[in-house]
Image 1 (spheres, rainbow, N blue to C red):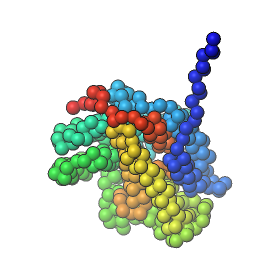
Image 2: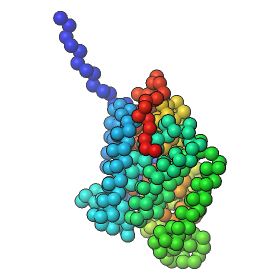
Image 3: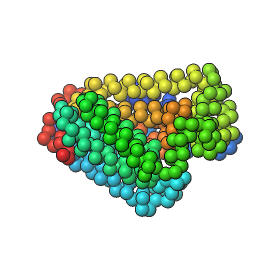
Image 4: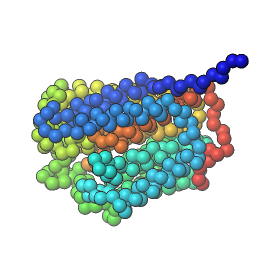
Length: 378
């Protein structure tokens, strides 16, 4: 009698075209934040987080993650994110004036990072069937309401940078779903009215001061305009080939604040120069091109929109973070993917790539998803 075959152990699976650029960007960030023994550095802790994040990528890319297409999974993650963001306002202690983190001893967790993944999943689920009906403004309002719920909670923290990221993520996914020009004009008008409402009633005084200093950088160069001014000095002083790794005076001498997180692009530009920045952006470009390629070849509409959502999230972070360092946008305090110091956002970014890898792997040969439970809300 033949022996029963034992189930094969799942082998680790990964996509080098996604993982390698992410690892390169992470190591560049670690090099930039390292002080090479000349003072306290966040680099050692970031190396530990990189090991954790890479492990998360390998686990998620190996598992079959197609279950995240289920409405129950999507709405559960959205609800958990909502509860965590609401709890921040009640039990979290302010850090630099913002209730944005849960602190568990030496480990801090920012629920906004989980909420970004939840929103991508929800919008991917919502648009996976309704993108053909996007001409109906009702769908724009419903998807916008899901997003606005998170945005309002984040603005109360207050965290203007992440609020802008959430809004950009939603707008980007609306654009790829085929929104009409008429509805886009309506959204632009709504956005203008919302900006006016924020200016006169929603923004904190220091946030308004940052915007004023962006319009007129010399207005308060030693106060609200200091960060932006120092960032531009750091970028400009890098010139063509940079000052060399570890020799960035603006960052290492702490003239440039938060150079390991909010202004790490400026610190990198100072040490690597224009040539280094071009290579950095090319690395991001390779990652984005691969995500776009995966989205085009995706087996289901959900997979396509989820992958595009991850691409839009990363691209918006890069564009906003770099623009702040170059003085093209007001300072809002945003990270740049894979490079900025921090554990929760790094785990989210590698985790999102792991899910994309898993969906692409297990979706090969699958037919388009036409299940009735594609609908969410509305």
